[in-house]
Image 1 (cartoon, rainbow over the protein chains, first blue to last red):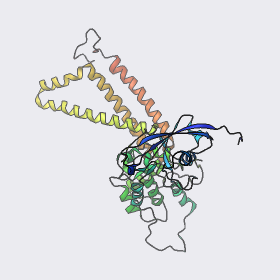
Image 2: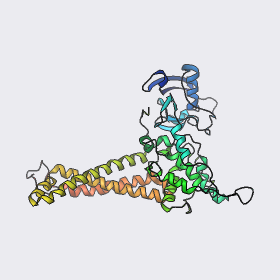
Image 3: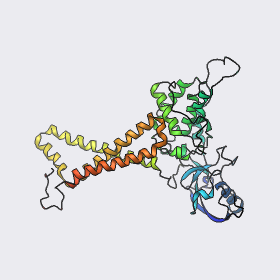
Length: 257
Length: 135
């Protein structure tokens, strides 16, 4: 890479809100950052604001490398991970950062993730079995794994669920992330919990609230083809079985990176 | 609080969904108008003819065109959604499919507009304009 990096000045607009201090609604704060490298990430900008300008700015982050799923937020009107979004991807205008929509704001960019994880738990995201394995382990062929490979990439960042208009309208909707997680077990050859899981997903707040808007697919930082998996779950409910061949998963090729 | 602040970016999928909703509501609202108008059948020919008379007004002609446009878009996009639900490989082409839906809707509506609006003799600026001249 060119060592003579061109630095630029960036205007960062952050939606700030502190309910504990008695604020009733969020307000915009504007920060000007000089000497920003186009290869800096939005997370770097937030850390600079916190370190240099406003120590009270609250946001979640952990690994900062796009795999822990802590720092999903709405950047320039779209859900993304702050640690995977480079300044140069965002054009020359001001950069707008807001918390995820549809979840209650606890402070600044931190939202209450409880409803999200309640939905996750409701689809039984664990292996259900009724008998001991025949050998020491429960084996699975590469072909069998291919059916759940794409879904296994989910990092639970909530970018998809909080980009979904159906979830904004009704936070009881399980949401795309929970359906992807359910699909990861529904199409797992080793799992036997499909009957109960499909009942949850066939509920009033289940998978039928998907309106194929595709915001979740646009938002997913892992490039999961979420609407495809939702379609397969709808078919599983319709046919009463997961014993059909779901349309091909990514199966180790065609990764969206 | 669950305040929705800045607008979320509108992409093809969400625009398709909003149009689907708006046209769906429009069509069902017309259904109520249609049921009320049909109800006048029970009250005899005179009452029904009076009720159906509003169909001859030029502004109702515009509304009927809007109704057909709504039905056309809602049907074509409905087929797109069914395709997405049943043939998961099509999820990769949902944008192209929506552009095709829009193109087909525009072509169909252009034809309908020619028949219903261009050839319509009842516009208020036409000399012989009066109620009851629908072709």
